[in-house]
Image (cartoon, rainbow, N blue to C red):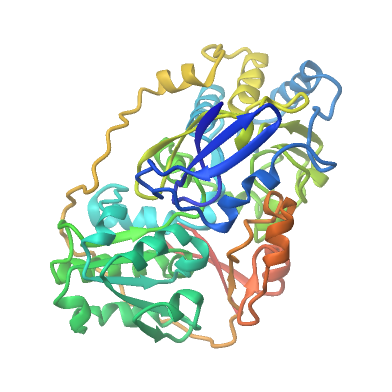
Length: 485
């Protein structure tokens, strides 16, 4: 039997074909996928080494039966003020999961619903709104093959989004890479420009004066190296401004493409998992939130100012640093055991298809949320299958490689910036993902892992450790976190 699904790692959205014969599984890249055309990075190739059960797998609710555990959560919610409850969701969840989380929060009156995407991409959201009037990604991977220059900044694309970099190298474009040290991407580019810590805004503002930018069709590609700073939104808007000033917008091969870190981070933006008042970062820095329900993410590893809560509820498929702190644990299905949809970096809706039955007593996230909603007396949560949720969402799945956007320059307010050269860089490795709760199960990936002495692996150090004794600051528009020495 053959199953077509989508890789659960980064936002590239690579298609995967699983062939199952009895208990034997075989995985290959989907040659018919318009995203990866059969290519897979090493993490995608070794996904089957990470499925199944082991001694870390969560198989049963932590309080007896499902009924007992769900009732315990409902009772806790009933006895907690609604502004003291928060849901912390993830770009690893599917569209159906996020939709039900949002519907539940709205139905019960919970205003504090946030995604871990706050840590990586909300400055892009705010920049898009300021530039285009809405959170629009106007370009796609197709533009890679129409561009004459591809400008990469704040992204080690070769390691973090390998299939996108494969497309870039297959194109005929002149590749320019800007970074603070010579990454794998920089080594494979036609031109490497090393920039001092924090001075990328100055370089961006000078782009219209560069011949390879002003006189060519340019596609700019960036990721978290650009967006995790106190002036991140300004940097993205300055990059969009440079494209407007040189006419590198609203044409094939021209525009600005952000590479999202998680498989469905774009989907979270679509659903609207973002608070107006207390952000995800502030869930952990204010004492207002008493009860926190964490789904498919590991804030004990990733959150800068992780703290203890009166009640911590965690839904996940495996043990993590966060589940060790949890008062209530809910066994959730991983990607191999649940079906639904996600949205990749170029805004395509892609399908994820289960090829294994739920292990133990685990359930998909949307189903767990529905059980809690019904226990609280809410109506509209009687779904039997993920397909029913998708039908209710009524999403337009049509896709266009380019979207026309307005061309209005955003005024960047000058500010006094203090630059320091002693900042330690943190980044992903080619072979690992987040806190390694999935990739760490692969012997192949573990054997291949080589740390880079020029940066700190985010997989091997928690943000609590990394940010110890450092002042945490937020981008003024998006409240995306960063730190100062």
